[in-house]
Length: 263
Figure (cartoon, rainbow, N blue to C red):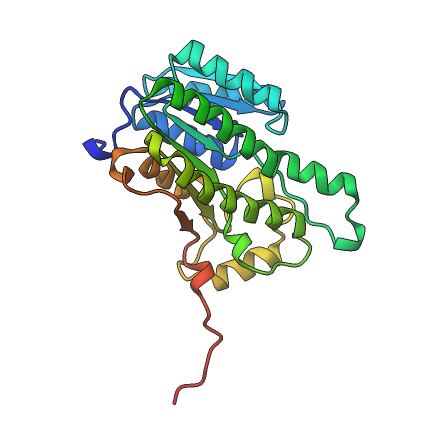
């Protein structure tokens, strides 16, 4: 049973990148807490159908829209569809992203701008669409952006990805201040190493072993391990939390242990 302070009964939520991975887990978790959910997916009707079925299995309404989060017209259409079909927007989760692991000298202008389109520009479009809807409704709301534990680390060949995640945190903090007078909180969730389709190729066996050794909790996260943080930030339990980045990384980024000899 969901605690009253974590209940999202009657809320209407939007989640981008909702057909797989962390976005899918968040969409289903929000529904389990009582929210109706509109999700955006990119050419993944099968995954979107599975997630919609799970949302409806919790007795909530589901709406799945196909489109690129890096296209402002798609985001505006998503917001309009959510308002029309669900009756409004109380929670907006910017999650859609893609990964690019490429050396700097091999990264073209097209690579750079293409990565930022979904991973940063799409978050701006989503925040803007959510803020417009929430301010017009006059009842406040919650905006949640997915950043990454990777933005706090220096990781070779992830320049575009980590630059986007750093930009998301600048956006999050600025909007937390700007939108607070409207009763809108803006926070971020920073997942650490997480098993998702996004990184299935980059998580080689050697990478997996390295993560498992460095993560104090001893394992790479499941998408569901991240979803609970979104429910919390969307709920009344987090009504006084804004401009915050919640690290969900099993202790990865605080682990400075190198095996010092005892003295």
